[in-house]
Length: 100
Image (tube, rainbow, N blue to C red; front, side, top):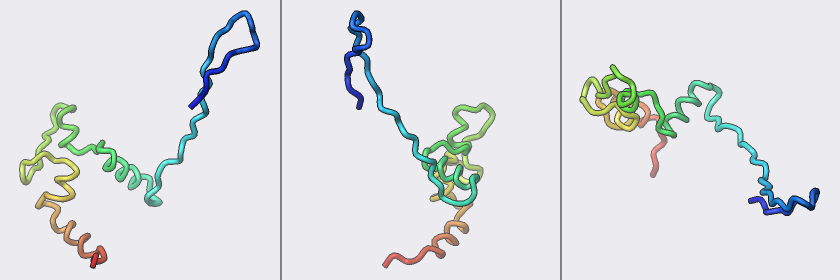
């Protein structure tokens, strides 16, 4: 945090100023060599995906329901629960090392 300083360059104006330290920005997280994949992962982490379940409440004409199960088509539903994507989930689960 900065400190309150008394400006002494002009003694007639006894104004107090606040000095703020410079903020440094950290570089964006890189998950892969693909910027498209990095964007998708970042959107999933932030909860700002472009799936109809989230966009359907803001954009007219988008049906926010899953076409197969009629649940809201959100990222957790699509990635963890939807029977439409069960084969892909099983394939990924088989590729993960066992945690024993």
